[in-house]
Image 1: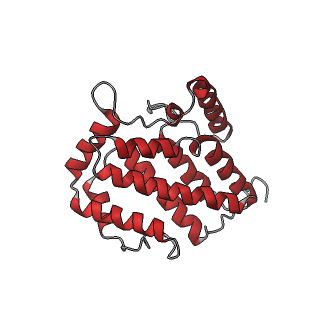
Image 2: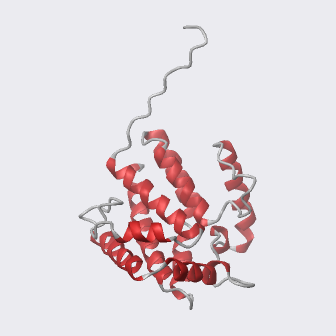
Image 3: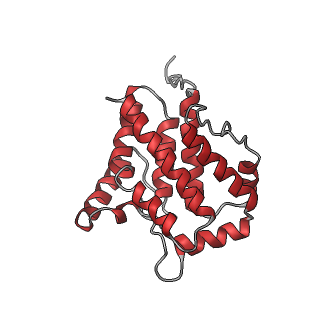
Length: 213
C-alpha cells in the first residue's frame, strides 16, 4: 500500500537480557539520586535470591551481593539514603566519591575519552537532554545507555554495540569507582550498592567475553 509504514517486529528479550537490563536500570537510578521510599520498598520485597532481577541461581556471589543489598534496603529509610547519597556523591565543595568514569583514568586521556563518548552517543542518537547538566560519563548515564542497548535487541549486532560501549567506557573505571565508594567515610547503604555494582559488572565483563570472542 502506498505510503504505508513498514511493520517492525521487536523480538522479546531473553530472560537473561531482561535481567541484565533490570540491573542496569536499578544501578542507573541509584547513582542518579538517592532511592525514594517506593524503590526501597520494592527492593525489600523482592525475593532474597534475586529472582526479581534475575541473578542466576548458579552465580552465588551475585546472589549474595543481592541478598545483602535487599537486607540493606529493609534497614534504610528514604531520607537517610538521600542524605548519604548527597554526602557521598554531591557534597559541599568536593564530593567524597566522584561519579564520573573518566575521573578514574589517566588524566592525559580523560578529555579524549569524553569526546569519543559524546561522538558515539551522537552517532547512536543517544545524546543527553538539554535539561541534563551532568556530563555524559556520569555512571548513572553510562548504566542507562547499557540498559537501552540491551533492551534494543540481542542479535550479534546488538551485542557488538553492548561490548563496544562496555569495554570502552565502563570497564576501565568501574572497579576504581566501586573501591572509592567502599572507602568513603559517609557510605553505609551505598557501600552495599557499590559491592553489588562491582559483582554485577564483574559478571558482565566475563559474559561479554563469552558472547563475543
